[in-house]
Length: 306
Ligand code: MLT
Ligand code: MN
Image 1 (cartoon, rainbow, N blue to C red):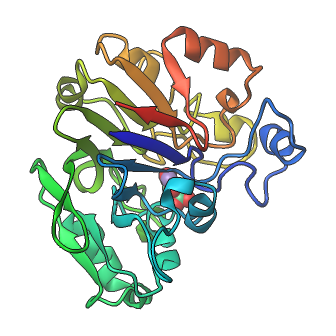
Image 2: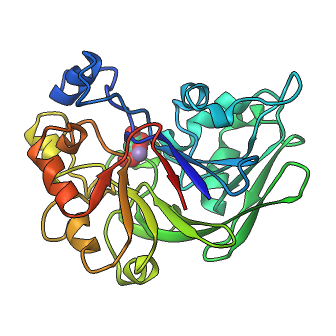
């Protein structure tokens, strides 16, 4: 299985269009220690011919153009992209679907809750249903990823619930949304005949079930949104904590680095890294701490072969 990180940034990317933050300004200035990161997405293939995109970010057009294995190969209209797997209905997970609107056969895989969001927003009908299939995937069910002609591609997914909340634009204006475990936010296990990897770009906390699932895994791409739960507040960038936004943070006793310490995961890579997170900067002490704990900080174009 081959996996390419198309985007390692969180919603907004880095640099974010309206951010004057330190990391954003360094990225904008071309500082090699802080390369730009587009919004979170990976691509995976078992056979090198059929590729699947995991979350369609607003940067998908740019990401495809930057990734040769995703370019057209034969004939005037062609793509190696056979489908898109969605982990939720956030803006940074679904809006790239609109980029794929050129009457190209493919399949969108997601939970009922996520596909209902597409169904309720008619702009997504631009992906004409006679060409673009929408496949509801039940939780905890191994589901093969198929080529447009219905043949197998060697890849399969298993969607599983992780703690999360409804997308930002579906929140009530008056109440803090509850963190729930259901179809709204899922992780995905990606497997071929020999190997499995996990892609979990949003997760509000480690649960015993999730810890048991990930124990001993070869490769996990995980929510790297914030370093500290309150960093948006202390930096003046916003009023919400990470836990309010449905993201656990890297540091601290209940943070991701601590939660993974006993899990024996062979390769751990942060993705969905917010532009306020100091680990984006290669020379930050937090980056050194993260690497010393056995984690890699994902970057756009990073390739992993299992
Ligand atoms: C998130 O990951 O919390 C969301 O992508 C936020 C957003 O929609 O901007
Ligand atoms: Mn996000």
